[in-house]
Amino acid sequence: MVKENIEEVKSEKKCACNKKGIIAGIIVLVLIAVAVLLIVLCGGKKSNEKELTANLEKLGGQFYEKFYYPAQEKSQKDVKAFIAKFEKTGIKVNLENISKISSVDKELIEGMVNSKTKEECDKVNSYVVVTPKSPYGAKDYTVKAILSCGFDKKEEKKETTTKKETKTETKKEETKKEETKTETKKTSKK
Image (cartoon, rainbow, N blue to C red; front, side):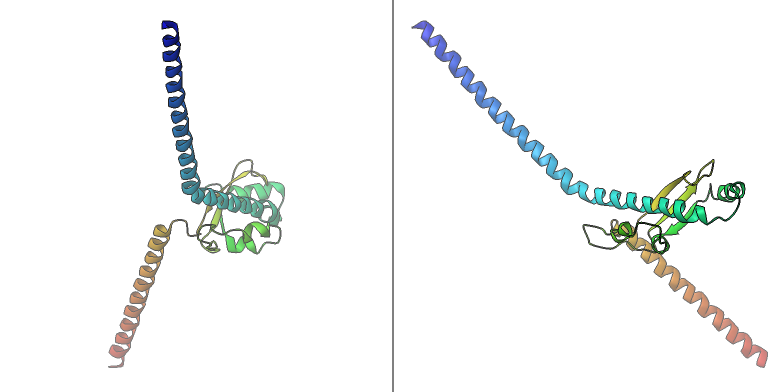
């Protein structure tokens, strides 16, 4: 009888341990599901932005390798000397100008769209800076891409405001110049 009671207590403990294990397993699965959901929801913007950045960098490489470098109709030594001048400043070219070159991937250009907002990348303000590197061959360069596709609205709004303020200031300066010219003409007529 004592043996049976001991067996019964052992089986109850096993049952309790199994229930705790099942509950812990369910909690772990729920936490994993929540983590995956957060990564998908929060990471979607960055992954699209990273993809578009990579595509624009690829287009910049195509521009340099298939158009800019071969367009230098000079001896190899002269081409390298000319290209070396851009090692510090780089060669800036926007998406609009890249799109005019027949040797670049047109599908990449057409795919330059923010998948979340469906906003097409601004072809004037989205650009690459291709920086040649020594020994200045056709494949010796780095590319930095700058996107304007609606990913950071606050930054774009700030930039737009600054442009508007600059235009307003320029108009004010032009108006003052015209007033000064008019006053000068009136003074010279007297």
